[in-house]
Length: 117
Length: 108
Image (cartoon, rainbow over all chains, first blue to last red):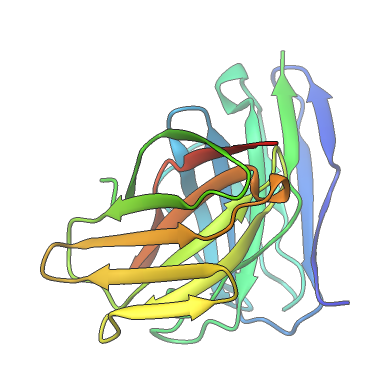
């Protein structure tokens, strides 16, 4: 089954404790992206990747890191989480390619609800 | 800046009625996409309409696009309880930018 898999589904952590949210897709998609969803603010893009070893900042990249060493995986890293990073996070992917990442449907994971205390 | 903005923010109707949601955007686009999100879950793609198209259908969904008014509408006909969800438009122009969504409730 074609899917985007995020783990974990729920995560509660404390300020400053490094964490990684994993994302994997099995559709051979070139483009992958991370979003956070907050009430009243909609979905905001954190980072995206056009292909392996190619990543770029989205609208709200501060406090986050990503890597794209393999085509299927795009982990989101919070080196020193803070309470303002409490949010619902989504990974998404599509076939992408130059000029095409916004021209084809995005496939979303089921989300990771992160709470930082 | 926000590209897609949905209206209304919330809509509650009776099962069997039609639901209409609107989306406005600010700049020129290549396409406009609509997504559905069930509570706390990932977004699911519904339909994509390109900038040179005016109307598109998919099952009980009908999407229109008016590029002169920079607006789109999503019509769900003969609504069902399972249509209860949040609906987002996403305007595609260099990047895909999502609106804040319309929360649709279908009452039995």
